[in-house]
Image (cartoon, rainbow, N blue to C red; front, side, top):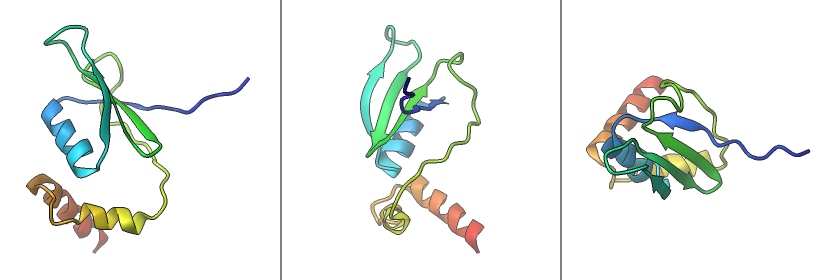
Length: 103
């Protein structure tokens, strides 16, 4: 028997904010999206490198407020990427908050 990789499911509430945060800010790509029909909750897969996440608007899939750890290498390069001048106003606020925590 072999166990496979784990793919966390995270609860989402605002599709436009999800795209802004995961795609525009963190650089994930959208692999696929699913709705049983228009107007029903969104279920989607995003990924960046080997990190895969499922995001769901469906209330029964998971609870809000999850925590997870994502292993990565070269954190300094990733941090520099997040500090790029092309960040949106929301991303800049997030960096400001993070920088305040480290003071």
